[in-house]
Length: 263
Image 1 (cartoon, rainbow, N blue to C red):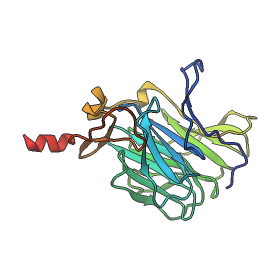
Image 2 (image 1 turned 30 degrees about the vertical axis):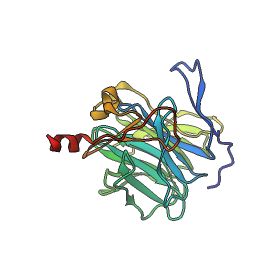
Image 3 (image 1 turned 135 degrees about the horizontal axis):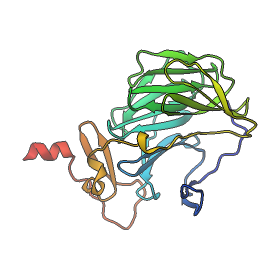
Image 4 (image 1 turned 30 degrees about the horizontal axis):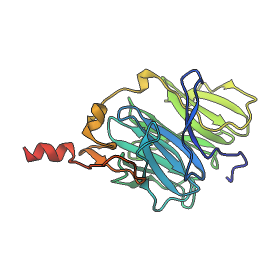
């Protein structure tokens, strides 16, 4: 699945109406691919398949840190579950897999490793706590729980899906071959319709809505008391220092759970 489309080697942001675009990260990127925002902690996560890493920074590009740099081949999509402290990503390399970790990169484990081809887009139903992915080699859409169990195939005749997202009762995905954006019912895989077609070079798709950005964690207020990165995990938040030094003194402090135990 070597891509013919040119991938930008920058991370950029803009206002909701597309105005005021600006580059937030432009160095040490090779194939910057998947992108996810932790809306609680205001952190940005991304995959770089060229450098075979997963990184995190603040949403303004500061405090950049490498989270995962081992046993990655072609990391692609990445998604976060801020309220639970989870991070998920797909890897369509050898071997293909879907992995799960905490938001600080710890607790990493493979949750789906069999009957995969090119796992591309990922999305989460935060209410039902279901994980969904598209497979561009096996031409299908599947779902499982957040541990990779209770796996089920929803759609089995997609051409070459790339991006995937969810909103309300529907899944939406992009397709390179049909040059379209399609939609199905997230529970049954039925009522499939084309939303838009005749769009060249379709890549990722994201649904952004207040109803999907709910929940809280200790990083949501005053950056959890951290000087740089506040990264939440079920045991409590941790303060992390960037891999790229800046002018501010970095303190890792104590996790919330450790602080409670010390009282």
